[in-house]
Image (tube, rainbow, N blue to C red; front, side, top):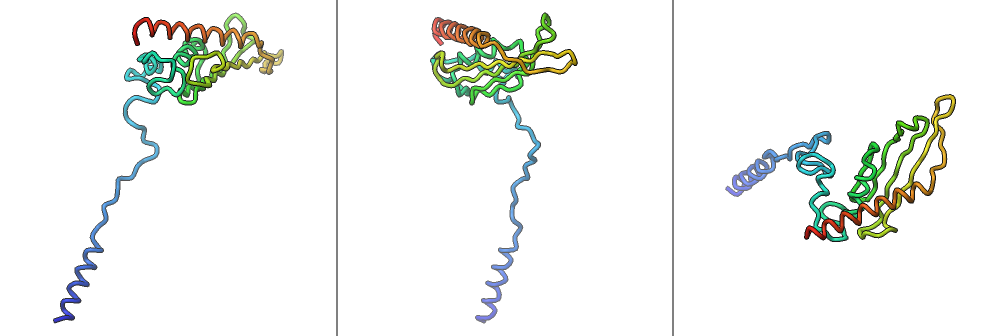
Length: 171
């Protein structure tokens, strides 16, 4: 009888081990997450994510840098095609832009926001310039340092205006 009991326990144990395992569903790495993107608000517009602002001089919402500098930078260079906008790292880069009045010259911009406070040293703008040669190829040319500073001043002035307007509205 002892052998029968041992055999029954052994068979029961083996049957329990042989039960099918529940496997989690496989995730397809190409599946896109549902819902709004990182930068887009519910409307899908990149700027809508930054319109609701708590009014402080520090980062708000999902923005990892100063919200006023971020919005002012995007607004200021919005005429250029933006290739990268990383609000967590504070980096905005553009593609080449050619002014219709100067078809033989093109510029590209890189904006770096270095902090969470609204300060002049928390913003760095770098412009890259190219001129079209007689053979039709683009050749690097030095960008005017004064133009970099002017663009920084425009962004800082706009950021300060946004902050003052937000404080006046009680945000």
